[in-house]
Length: 321
Image 1: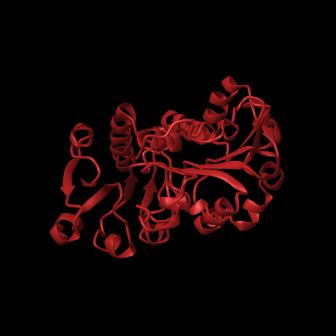
Image 2 (image 1 turned 90 degrees about the vertical axis):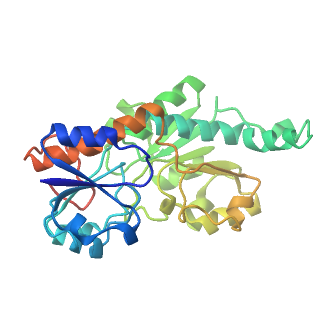
């Protein structure tokens, strides 16, 4: 059986190629450019490793033998799950590979906002000094941090935050019972209550129909005046226009994000030019260690599925093993 590698971010696929060969399958590197991709390359694939390329119903239709799509990452919103399900294709994701990196990045963005790191760096490079009143800078100690979504990453963020001695770490996650949240160092609250008491709100949710734009104008209106919003999950969780309005009014003190509704964000958008916005390029997941681990996990998942193994594999939301 053949497993295709349709991946445009990494220059080298040695890890994936070795895993696939060692498992007894035949690897095929597929050009990410559709113009260079031949129908013959796709027609007899049993598995597909995919990163940024959208897996549409049209692409799936070109792979009638396909049994599994294994995506590089924890999310699969670039895959048409419904079309895959209709075709009998399972979609797998790789949670846990980058938990430490994303938690570190979330904390870095929190610090960048509360300490004014980026804005002051820019000002000093331009000859500024004593850039703005120090009262604008905040400490985390004695403040309330709200975590929306308390899976692996949310819990890892809470663990890191305890060293800063916050007043409270409050958590909203309807999928977890109150005691499970308490056992992991959080104080369970309803979403509306969390927004109203938190000085910093950090998002750690998958993007689904229920979570899309969970932070909209109404949610922002519930937040404390002068609070910060951090998003290292999916851009679609946040209504960007509503965030800009809240920043312009001064209701929101700052917004930091690693992913956006449109990627890359348009450089003429107010978001990219706003003084109170800190942006990174969807890199929260990345480190030297996690890149190698992600490559291996993505290839191993596809190989194990095709070998008939199911334990320990992670189907994307809406997909089944």
